[in-house]
Image (cartoon, rainbow, N blue to C red; front, side, top):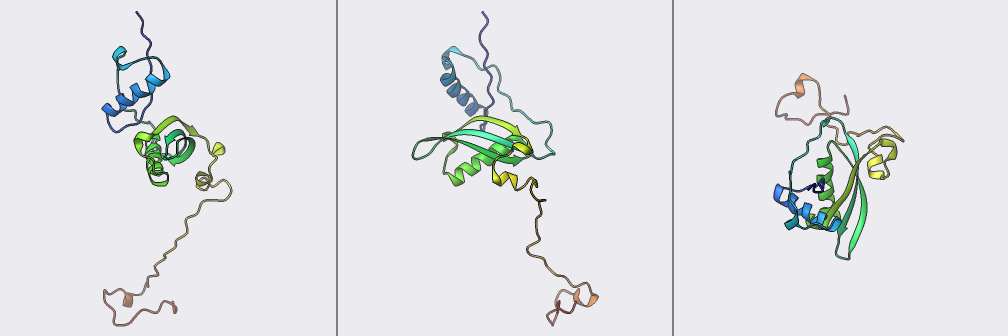
Amino acid sequence: PSPQVYRMKLWSLDDTRAKSKFWYFLSRLKKVKKANGQIIACNEIFEDEVTTIKNFGIWIRYQSRTGFHNAYKEYREVTMNKAVDALYEEMASRHRVRAPCLQIIKICQVADADVKRNNTIQFLGLKEPVSFPVVNKVLRHDSKTQKTTFKYKRPNFAAC
């Protein structure tokens, strides 16, 4: 006999939850029960290049208080796992969606030209270069007289 082998990429906190998710999705996609199948391996996948920032597009299905919704989110992260972590945090904060109510349908790396969301586009520098202005600039006097810990007189920076 040559049994059919199925493979899935899942995100969970530990092996037990990953195996449970595997059987949850497989029973909905194919006519296979846990009693009639066997998990061959459950491995954590590590990415090779973790030094460059990449854009990730994530298609999800989630259950809110009103019903089920499909959504597409974009994240700018170093690894795919970090993008998924950012997804779970955003969905919990903005939409009050708990982790069990969130299903990741598909994840792919998106090129800079194909990015759709304005929140991601602003960090690409396509329209204008990205700049982070110094909001709270602390002026420091460079003279020797102002370098003591305690001064009896407030320094006058306007005269500099």
